Length: 82
Image (spheres, rainbow, N blue to C red):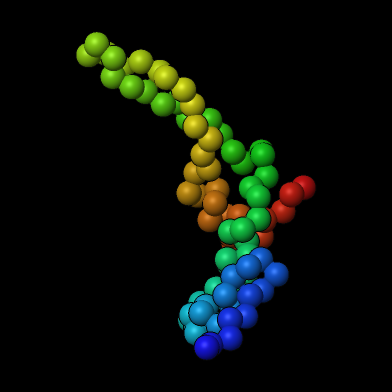
């Protein structure tokens, strides 16, 4: 039976250790830890959701989203809750 080591965020350390590569700027464990952090509310926007009803598009709700460019900046500069 193989021993599984988890970090404080619950990621299996042994599985991702080999993914670190000299060509990358950040270790994969750091990126995974950043992805596990909550996104600050100021970066979350609303996007409308539409459904087709009787042949017409009708707004039926909204979803929260973060644009990819903002998410990349959060990963590059760290996820600050300030």
